[in-house]
Image 1: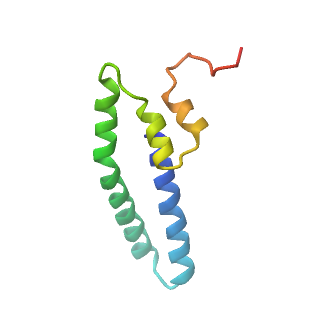
Image 2: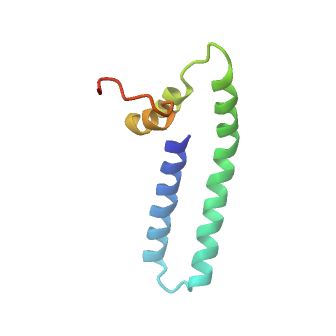
Length: 95
């Protein structure tokens, strides 16, 4: 979910940059309000999947929901692995 939220933040930032280049006359207060609104929309869209992934991950015999999310949203597998690996557990193949 961290990788998914990171991707959403990147999309919001890219769209805000695009908007700012198309509408340079926007004042700072309007620009800040638009940015905050777009972030709230992204957060609301991600809220329910975040809650469900946590619930499903806690179930015994759970499928790797991190892997499913990575595939579904084309997330960087290394980023997903890094945030889903328990603290103190080294990467596979590292010594």
